[in-house]
Image 1 (cartoon, rainbow, N blue to C red):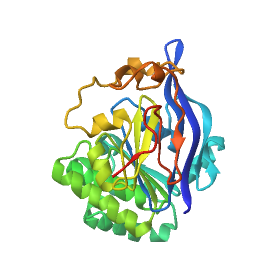
Image 2 (image 1 turned 90 degrees about the vertical axis):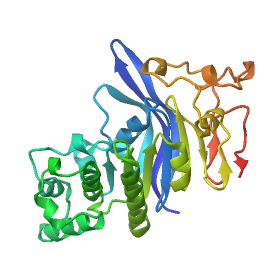
Image 3 (image 1 turned 60 degrees about the vertical axis):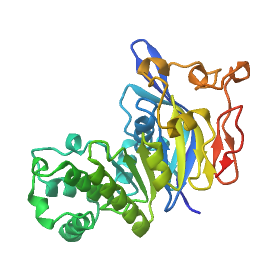
Length: 307
């Protein structure tokens, strides 16, 4: 299959006062055409930082320490700003979790969509109208202002903007966080319908592992800046202790704060909170890959258990 996204050995640090704090560590995975890869983890674990790294939109206080990110075979980390701007929207796009923060209240939806559009201006109006219809909105909303739309409608506008140029990679960064349950599933079904129609590679970021196992073709689990497991829902069962906790009905372990992100590089990232830890775990564990592009970062658990 064609690889749309490929991330190799990516590590990112952030300057905090007079020191550098790890944000992402040794990230490796790829997404193929027509694949919906779900990335799951708690707030603060690095999911959004990874999304911004792919789009090359990290804040100035963040630095890519090492690694490569390929989109359609192009190493975006080696590109200048002008080159990367030409890729955003055309080849890769992002849907943010809070559309109200990204839609300027002073401009109509039509103005926002014109800004996102790349292509023949003669077809601009037709394609914008078509994009709105595709996400379930009426053409007259091109003349509406963001505050005149509901949260679900605003998110549909963001999806239309992200997909108007038919990019090959779509990143959805917790796009349903601020929505009610009914609207959430409408948005998820919409994204799935669009993926099946246009076949982009899609990275869906969420904190809900149960949701990820229902909609994803593969699921990655992130903890404290590391990807600790990748599995295939319906084929392999999560085996990492942290994944097992997330799958449980009750989460008994404290949430991660930014203060804990300064981990030791020579110890398993989940060591302090792992219910199965022993002296054997007091070292950094490399990620073990398997032929079906699943894997795990744990010394006690090898091949993902079969469903």
